[in-house]
Image (cartoon, rainbow, N blue to C red; front, side, top):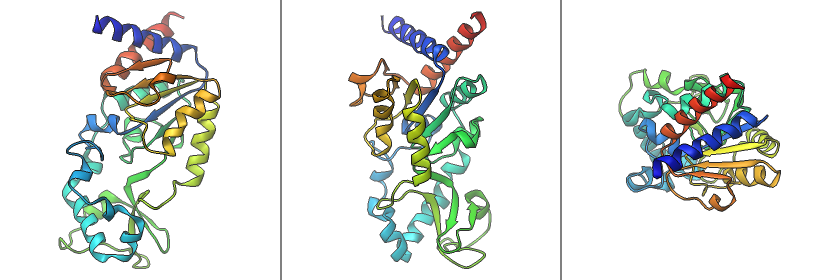
Length: 262
């Protein structure tokens, strides 16, 4: 019965996508974990290995030791430059190629939607992108993989090559606001879509998690694909508690079938 129920739900979602004019996909850590990137809050996640205080903007700015710790994390991990898109990313990118996707709004910082083939102009990264470093003084941007490729002592933290200013991962730290232009554009798309699909998010981090509410309040249909229950499940038109990759690849195939016969 579980498989039948899942198949029916995927068919219902595929029908919604085919019928919709403006589809927005909102993604969270549950998409990235299927590419081997650990999330932050679950058992064994990043916060069980590192002190969250080291990710506050105040400590980063005023503590050289904190900057050294963060650089060691980047040096040892390599996750954000080596990770590859999984079936969920590829299915979402394919929906865009089929003309069925307005944009992706993501809480993830791993650049995998772009790597999968989504147009970067249509990916709104609410928490930034870990693949870039930015100088806090002159704002010069550097690709993380380029900086990592340059040999240096283990405790030598790189600085800006133009002005020797502090290089900060281009992501939102605790104590920082979300990038206002990105948040404004994401909110606009959420308020003006007719279908919003949440994929792999527990919807507990605000203000990003307001996006489903904005869409629902504007009259859009809401689909939630997440392994665990969320506080928005009662408002959703369809809830699929399943892996993002399997659910999204199955939905994509059904969308292709329906589009071919319509």
